[in-house]
Length: 119
DNA sequence: GCTGTGACTCCTT
DNA sequence: AAAGGAGCCACAG
Image (cartoon, rainbow, N blue to C red; front, side, top):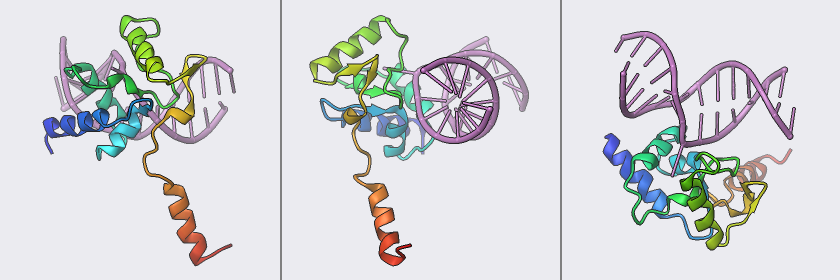
């Protein structure tokens, strides 16, 4: 896998985030098949040609944006998100706006386990 | 090749 | 609630 194809995968995931929802860097990395490489996602976004890319829907796992608070890009990101209906509380995006990776990965796992052995 | 530096995340104090 | 540390990995010097 070349860096270029990894970038392409990352950008594909980002462009697939629905309006009104957000995704963490780590989540984007996982969906792109690059678990544990959130920093690489951040770097790709920084260097990417963001034209037409919904980069503003990517934030840190704690709901805060990755950019310097108060910077121009930070303002842009917040403004775009609010336009899409994403609301903030204390500078953090509320958890319910995060796109779900695998709908009920936990439920699937625990469900199958409990089906085998309910203890 | 080693070191420092992050648009990161998780766990432990 | 806040801070420190460890894991993570590409890139620049």
